[in-house]
Length: 119
Image (cartoon, rainbow, N blue to C red; front, side):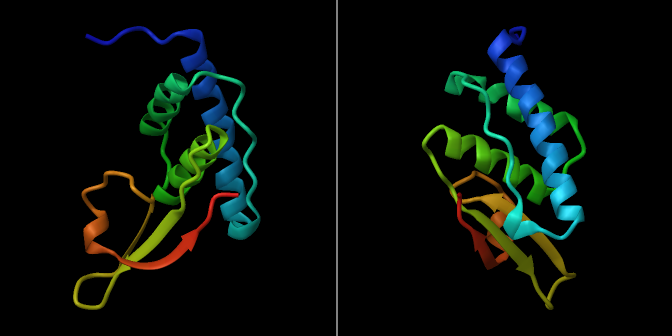
C-alpha cells in the first residue's frame, strides 16, 4: 500500500521539476559541461522519494535524469559520476547515461565513453 507523500517529499518533487527544466534547457543549448542545477532545499534524505516519483512521471532523457539525480546525491554528500556509454556497430547504435553504481539492467550492454564528475 502506498503512503501519501509528506511535505518534504512534495518539496523534493518540486525541486526535481525545476532541476529537470534547467537540465533540459542547458542540454538544448549544448552546454553539458556548464550545466549547474539548483541546490535541493534542506530536506531529509528520505525525501528522495519525491525526486524519483517526479522523474518517473515526466518525460526525461536518461541524461536529464542522471543530471538531476547526480545533483541530489551530491547535495547529500554522496557525489556520483554520470557514465555515458554507447552500443556500437554490431548492434544498432544507441547511447545511454546513468549514475555510477546505479542498478540499471541496461548498463552492461553499453561501452563506457565518458564520465561526468559530480561538481
